[in-house]
Length: 146
Image (cartoon, rainbow, N blue to C red):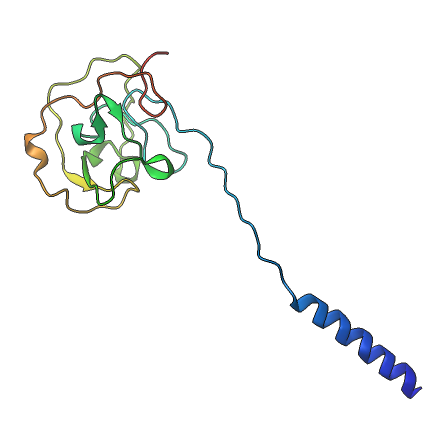
């Protein structure tokens, strides 16, 4: 009987110790391609298209949206102005402009955000940003031809 107990103990010990050795885990997250939206897309899931006027001109380079969230490709330390009155997290439930809609003449910034959606200081006033942000382009994340 004692031999059976020793064998059972060794079997349990072998099972437990074999589970302790571990190999490094590989984690892969595939987020897919950036949304193609005429005026950029929100910096939070599900990354819906944002209406014209949400992003200020500093979010566009040569008329191309620099991206937001996982597809942000601007410089480190960037904070650009947004008009969060067009943010559904701030109660926006209005219409979203159709592709090709006419831009309005004056962006009205009331907040600055980095490429990941964190509020901060852009280092300049959004009051002087009067040019429309989107100017076309036809590139993923920047909108354009449809």
